[in-house]
Image: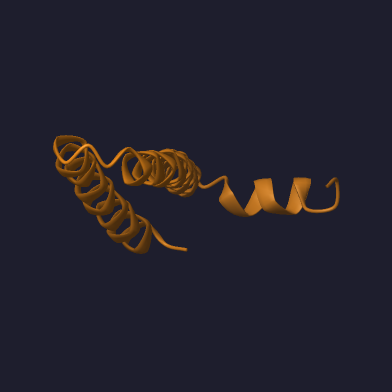
Length: 87
């Protein structure tokens, strides 16, 4: 998954999380605590997904930054050749 896809997915998750938080307020005003609990579970799931995608995005950004730095130094090819068979 590339950076733009991750950013789009993160934006989608944030939107869905905001919607779920708004639903909690509506159901709480109606004293519909069963639906509040359901939204709470959905909020926890969305927050976990958001955290995972954010960490994945940061890892991707760091990886691309590292590759860019290695290319600038002319070390990318040497590093790949040296460590390719150690893994």
